[in-house]
Length: 172
Image (tube, rainbow, N blue to C red):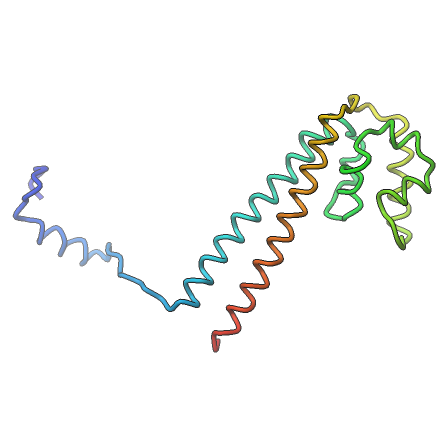
């Protein structure tokens, strides 16, 4: 109160009382174990979502922008987008494939009409792509990025399942 920085200030009690009267205090909180677990899992999920976003941004900004920029407009959360990055990041490789071989590689199984049109457009644009040449190191990086993204997404799903189980313990 008098501007001194003395560790043994006799006016500490007055400072504490003043801060409490202003509502500037924190109360000790020790919630039940399920609530602490829930808070920890929610914090983990937030961190995992940030990592997922980081992977997606690195794939788009580092790999697609440099090696297959035409794919960016079709890139989404679908599994075939990641399969293209994983197996066919090199547009000249796609251009050398027959359309059916390309589809079997990146989207095996049944395909609906929108997916079919999207894959056709990607296959056609690969022929005239302006992307840089893709080397073995880039292919390895693409593989690691896609596998890392898939692993993170699996971890997010497992975390959400744990959150759901813990939430069932609460009567609310």
